[in-house]
Image 1 (cartoon, rainbow, N blue to C red):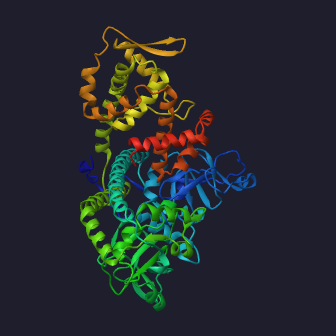
Image 2 (image 1 turned 60 degrees about the horizontal axis):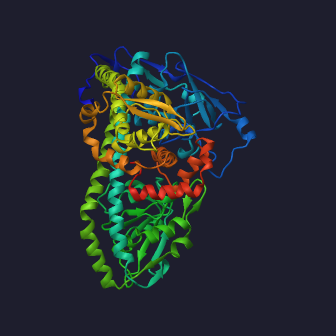
Image 3 (image 1 turned 30 degrees about the vertical axis):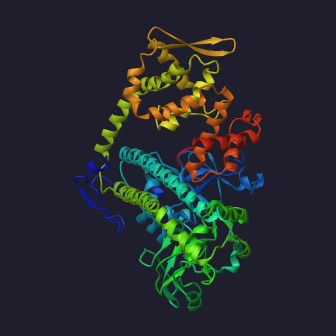
Length: 615
């Protein structure tokens, strides 16, 4: 849809250097004319909100962490109302800003901006996160050290901002919301593909390095450890260098000198200690996620200005004992990953101590065997590595494109109004048909299972949910975390009504629950099902066959775990402990009637069946 965007017919000079030309009917206003500061305290019963660089404003999960918020702390927190803008004073220049999703409390280090009637906060949240605007934020921020600069309300309200008419603010926001939803779906699919490819690669590595009975040695005996302290600062009295940082290592299994690295400076001592050499293995030493600890990358090509950055450690192999290529592979094996995971400690950020790294046990065959293994694994994983790199590049490209698109749209370089009208008309057509399509999809479940003694209303709802997820079908249902959740009672009533209206099936209440009985046109949905959903028949069959004779509570357990798992993946990652925590303490209290062991057993069963959400 973005190829239909065109510039506005007329422009004028905004008078603001970073903004340049704007549509002739737009205006420029100070933020103080668009927002008023909200500085209200004393609402201690509201939930705590946080502002994240990655996810914007969201409710903070206090129960899932070790740090608890006391009532006295809450009294100092400021109230934020749904639809407000909230930003972190110290991180606004990095994009830590967003629309408040629900009434809540924010830290005193945050600023809450209440919109005036002519202000659509979604539009300004997009604008404030553009690179051009973040540079302007940096100029208006104050502090002794750049990384500690703060954007106070008094400075924020002085900032000039482009100001389209309210209807256009909303049109731009709707357009970008729709585009963002598509981009996120694309990225989730590509990340799922990368995950599957990595699982195949992991199996190859594990088979190659763990099946033989080789002698084991501590890591300290086979490689020298150097933990870097070189940060991204630039100082005039230091040597200019290129910095291999956390992201470079995390995203690439191989490091070469021709990659795009960050420019920085370092002292002569730091250059001497952390200059990268061919054969070095760099690992992630600490991270916000313990699952990202100990990720290795092999240095294949280097230069005299390429140094290892902060949050990383260099493992320099002792050439007489181990090769860098073999070390990089063995550090990816499950046994080593498990050792790193167990050793990682921390609260909000996890890290590995020097001792923990040095104490890792790894198999060390002879050098000849190492070389043979590396050659075999290089050959076996070359196509997988290429596919992983391709998918990762696609993610980077779509994110870069989205960034450029947002900037062009919110600054008036492109007009979305005509394109949005097309999208809106298409959605209206889809919406008019959604009830019938949903009924067709659901009727196929009833048609196949209505004679099963375990099939009833609740099991029906769970199978609709699971079939939707596995088939990638959106029927317009909105699932709630109710007692038998995930559950959409309104959608189920609509389905029952459609089934009866079409004379396919009718739900009847019996002593032991609800049953579906065929009507005179039972089976008449088949032609529609093939037309709308014929391409997902395999996935649909998988769910039906798996749960044909399953009891209702078994279906509920799997559907609940799936929903909690998917929610966590949308936020970044999901461990078994996090999934169980969500189910037992953030759903309905009735979930606690099922033992934790049973939830965990079900998780293992789902993995074995491949019944897992796509990240």
